[in-house]
Length: 361
Image 1: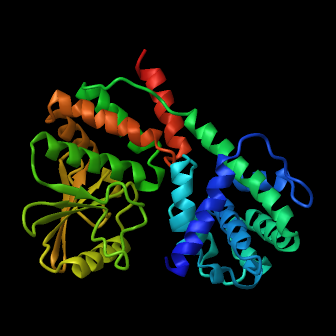
Image 2: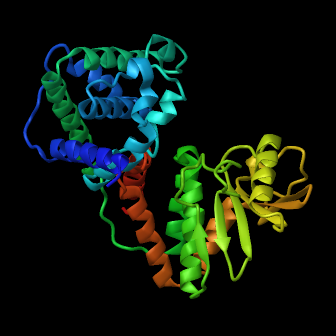
Image 3: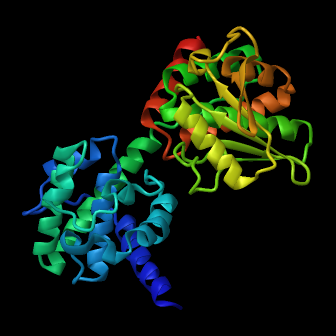
């Protein structure tokens, strides 16, 4: 076993041992419940995840100091492998690369790092915790770690209790209204329209027994760029080398987005000619002539690529209408499963439950 694998195995065991513990664990001085709650009462999960990463890195290597060199612990590797693996297995909410998203390549987790943050108060809480983590004896750090992971388990229990159990539905009008209301009310930064569009494509292909692979619709909504080698939000891989590229958005499709899309597609495959943008009428570039009441609302040519702007509401309705009842039930079940996933936005979970309360009367 390599040194990296040994390190990951040790960190995984430390964390799972904590996750297995039962009972209530209090935060002992110099730590306090108040400072920990600040990290658990923000939508920016990366702050609590960077603290978890730092705790486990220091338990593995007591010489490690995030205030001196955070990246010396290889945070991406330890968070995305042993830590995320354990959190996923125990149903604990987490992000894909939370610690890295808030660290932003800053070597030292200190006041200078916190001063550049949008949520400076939360970042300063992290800095204060880091100072204490580095100051306390190893045994005291272990006690704090146990209480900190127990707080994570409380979050997992709370999210689990938000699950909703529903019988499969097949009425296309009912399901269309649900999807459109989700898109309009809780787009979740674009994750919801991307997920719905991709699931519809996936189920349609299964319905017709087509050997077409749909990828990207469950990825992070920030993944489309040239460095990720992802040409669009969704890719339909047809037969042979044929592929369809989709952008899905509930934000204005700006010139910058157009240029970025073109760059991504050209890096991916210069033979691609079309990009389909699934969006709302108001997301079409203002410079284009639009027919907002049409399925294809606008078109434009940018260098080698033709862009077709598809009405997301019409796309949802027509896709559902031309599914078999069995496949509509499958789509609805997949939608419920997505909402019940541990890491799905709490706003989405609450809206989904309230919507059904109001529409299943």
